[in-house]
Length: 79
Image (tube, rainbow, N blue to C red; front, top):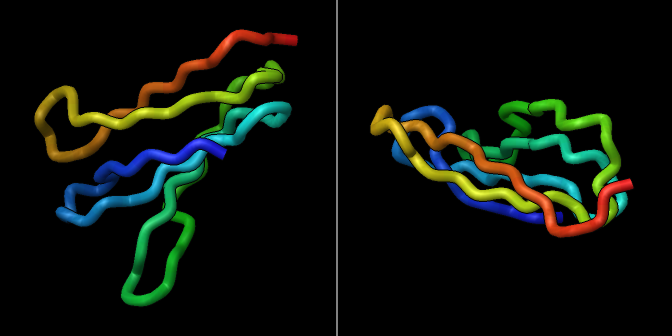
């Protein structure tokens, strides 16, 4: 599992972005706190291609709207 922090909803609180590690699909899950509970905010389907090395994830507000964009990458090893 690879993890990044970013702001998905412009509320000034970071959400947790998670993508699968080696040998699994690269769906992105975004988790955030609602009060004291950690809840799944969104799931973004990834590629149907199995990435044997897993995906990497980074977040950054590229356009200044207060919401993080997601960048996904891979190491070597497609199958």
